[in-house]
Image (cartoon, rainbow, N blue to C red; front, top):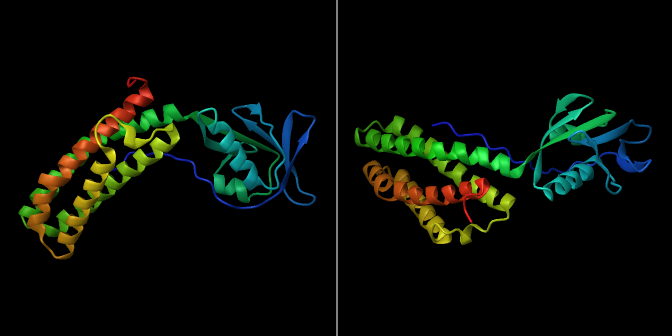
Length: 235
């Protein structure tokens, strides 16, 4: 079971350079004494705010600024060459940096569409795990169960991140009692973990069918509601 990709920008901490305004139109970064100047553009337009003490501070401020417009940084180019955020923060070279953004709503919409398709694959995969345990094909079952658990963790992480990006309190979702359902899901996973440690494989198959999959069906309803919010179909 492969997981759909979900990109979320993160902020690191590396200090380089100094930023200051030039002609009130473009911010330039000087990376160290005698270093080069760096022009900053966001989606092809000059970007200008306050002064910064480092490239790290610049990236943090720029990402915070575009987030206020419902955007996230998806790509950075330094002198026309794509570079990772970590690479940009650590670099002292370059004369122009271009930041490309994408709408949070568009980013989440695509991820929720992929996730909606993934749920069914997850259910089918977990059912196969049950059959493998019952057929005493333990090694194969354990490998696929690990993938399934990673998938569950991925879904929960995406929901938490999406709620933060959308400014949505997941406990207010109309699909049910999210806090209780999450607690019940966590308790179910702990029971499965305990059964794994003691080699109670038939019990695992039972708990997957009778507890884990029903809990995930509830999670799927919350997922659908969040997906509807990104599409504007939920009021």
